[in-house]
Amino acid sequence: MEYLIGIQGPDFVLVAADTVAASSIIQMKHDYDKMFKLSEKILLLCVGEAGDTVQFAEYIQKNVQLYKMRNGYELSPAAAANFTRKNLADYLRSRTPYHVNLLLAGFDEADGPSLYYMDYLSALAKAPFAAHGYGAFLTLSILDRYYRPDLSRDEAVDLLKKCVEELNKRFILNLKSFSVRLIDREGIHDLERLPLPQQ
Amino acid sequence: MALQDVCGIRKPPVYPRWNSPALFSMLVGDTMPHFDEVGGGHLLQECSSPLQLYVPSLNGKDFLSSSYLSSVRPPFSLCHGTTTLGFVFQDGVIAAADSRASCSGLIACPAVQKIMPVHSHLVVTTSGSGADCMLWQRILARECRLYHLRNHRRLSVGGAAKLLAYMLHPFKGTELCVALTLCGWDEGRGGASPPVEDLWVMEEKVTGWGGEEGCGSKGRKETRECAGQACEREGEGEAAGEARTEADEEQTALGQEASGVEEELGAKAERTESEREEDATHSRRVEDGGLSRASTTESSRAGATAAEQEVRQEPWAGGPRLYYVCSDGTCLQGELFSVGSGSPYAYSVLDCGLRWGLSLSEAVSLAREAVYRATHRDAYSGNCVDVFYINSQGWRCREREDLREEYYREKEKRKMRQGEQEKCGMKHK
Image (tube, each protein chain N blue to C red):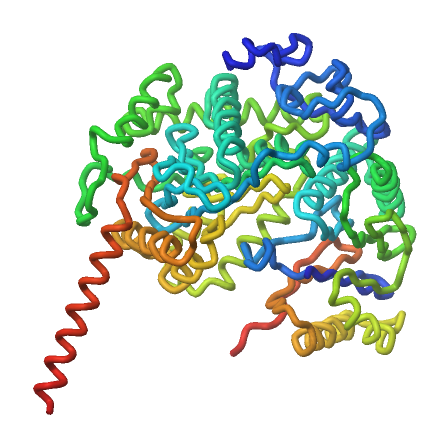
């Protein structure tokens, strides 16, 4: 039902998420933001079971910020991703596992851009592009086909648009709009929502 | 609460000290203590929270996951038949609900109160299992009141929603079923404040407003009870300015405090939106920034003035607020929510007629119409409709209206219209 996608370029990461918050057959909210800002250059995209997403993502968010307050510097995306995975794994065999699927996107001064794919079984993989949700079945092959490591920002946005078009065409659910953000050396930038409004 | 004392549920170590705020202390690196350990009398390190009081106490032996819980079957099937709705418009918030409590195929009670006030500026519509809703409404009211007493200002609607969501989280996966819509008015942090209107001058012809003797005056009396708090005296013009500056001072004091050592203790469950604003964190800004941008680009309400937009978008400016909190963990902010088995029918009526610029009477009649249509189609909703209206002065309720009368009235109208059409048809012939 929900959809997340991330595309890593040579010096940026582009991420997008749908903006629907649904409850059984009703769309309760059309402009729901599924991205959580962990730090100035790290975004956590979180989908999954209703309450678990917000609870887990905010828990990670607050702890990453606490780390910064205590130590004076921010966690790198790799460290944040591994911290998230560790928490997910710790809860996995408890009585209250968190059923969440995550994408963590960040930019590190030393390592450059990075995109991490995590699922509810706390698997962690660094990937050049990734997607979550039923929509992923339809769009991963598009990404496989057209992705290049040296994409420019415009090309990455075009690739994202291709994926969204495919979803509009073939996906049974109506995912009307997507929030899009780009992370680079300067930080997190909001891009225009997709699909673009009709003129 | 007294009943808890009598039943001995309250254990002294678990109950919080009256002078310390409830904390969720989550230290990085520690494994988060599982809530089930509390049942045996253990606590999170130095943290005592009233919230753990309500955790289902399973003595910390080995037990399997939900199979243990599902082995205790309820004696009857719990049904969630209801229609409740809430929406925000330029004048405030409207909350409406039907009054039928059903249990499988039986109408357990035809005159239930599904909209309950939490405090003078917050009303909660309930749906789900009746007993759970009553209990959680009281728990929320208690926590809001405690916050108010400790911090000399009302908890914002968003803060109350967050608090409730965190309190409900330990029960995820159990049979608890509540879906609440919090409808209220935030007083804001000073500066931009919503226009003060004279509540008792009603130009619109709305039938059956409670007026002075009804619920509205109750709300006002409540505010006068806490006469010590300057920020309470919102209805009185002279004090209002004073109240806002006091709230400002308190806010800056809190801000300085907050940026200090208190931050070490990680996420506080009771943090209001205004406190979070002053944090080093900007997380909420990203979320709300995204949301506010969405509401400007997506909404077709071109007629909204700049002031209205500010009221709607800037969370710290105060204004009408609507939150949906569910026992499965959902906590959403929005401008229109409808909950219950009759909600699809209500949504369709509301989506046609709802706009920001509605007048009060239009909004009330729209809410009433939506509930009426839902009760007509949904078997589990029916009987009467309650409509509540919340604005900067507090909440007011409309007299309960029996929808059966409305059904017959509509039938009459249809008959008359048909009769007239036939007459016209005959004339043309």
